[in-house]
Image (cartoon, rainbow, N blue to C red):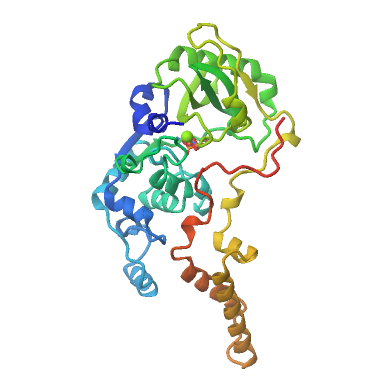
Length: 372
Ligand SMILES: Nc1ncnc2c1ncn2[C@@H]1O[C@H](COP(=O)(O)OP(=O)(O)OP(=O)(O)O)[C@@H](O)[C@H]1O
Ligand SMILES: [Mg+2]
């Protein structure tokens, strides 16, 4: 995969040309200070974003006293742009950066979705996401012409898309090789959608027509992947473009097979029949690739013993707690050990988090995938 292929899939590259086929969206360039904020450890929300959200002056001061390291950053101008965009887009938005949405961070959101109604919702999701970190720090890591000097020149952007309540069974990922639609996969392989078996002929026809009439040879590459939403019969909405390579989740296809898929004659106008893959029985669903993002990494480290420092802190804390108990001091609080655990974890978390997940690829492969 080449850098250019990744750059072609950057939101601001494809959206202006295809916006009439896609969801209404705004692109806001990221100020350098905001990039630094995303890259810094800890999750402290900018002051403006938490003001007016039900916190009194005293509560804010109390918070400041309790958290001496937490200096809220401030981006008033950027934040004003975000608020304006949210209002113009109907009050609810879906956030992402140049390529990726913080899909691995939904566990931290109040309603476990990426629906954002104010800047602090967006900041919290972006700051908690490894996928976003991948965009910021290693977008070209899988490219064979990766060039660190050039990488610094990416103009980072926040993308805010009008929020739509999408039905996951109507989303599809389409694989284009040598300008031919070779494969279509259901977008959410962790679920079984019984209607796909019945509608599959019509789905393939609609996607074929959409591709050959509206995308074909308009995208500046001959190998790529795009995602669509079939709103209704003959009504397809373009969601995203992705590079043709393992940095993109092949879903019900393996990249090895896509790579070795017969190219055919790229000059020929003959339209091959794409292979449509979907889960055909309830037994065929794949385990969710995001389940590993659902629990704080410190807990995983503790349970697995992968970080000896955390383990030592935890054991010391346990010993201390037992000593306190046996010395007959105040032991009325049942949840004291948990409080201590969080303190220790919070302390040890500084600088630990970034390299805990493999960020070479944001694709997390399930161990025991069953594909129908
Ligand atoms: N405007 C929107 N409103 C609500 N949900 C959305 C919206 N756009 C996308 N989604 C949901 O979020 C999912 C991920 O969106 P998107 O494909 O843009 O993220 P991504 O980071 O590019 O994913 P990938 O890395 O797999 O390409 C979509 O499959 C869809 O279910
Ligand atoms: Mg994408």
